[in-house]
Image (tube, rainbow, N blue to C red; front, side):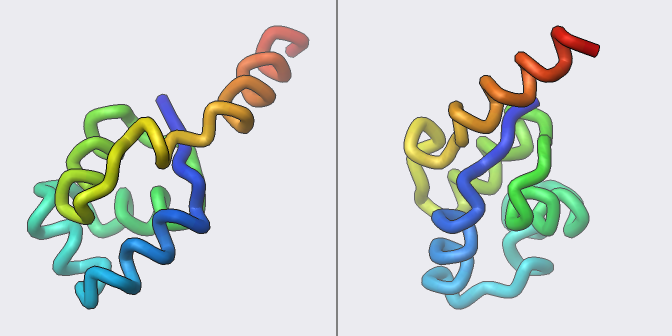
Length: 78
């Protein structure tokens, strides 16, 4: 599971001039997945990859590694 930097995702979605429904359709994912990525929630890597491809984004620049690290550290303590 990964999470995206939501600022980058929101900007890319706006720049694409596509609705979340159109992005979901082109990426072959559910509209719920598009909303989850836009909000920075955890999603499967392949879902983020498909959405990034549609938006012409580099996944390495979009994945929020800092938040992932904090999330994983918090899971270790639970």
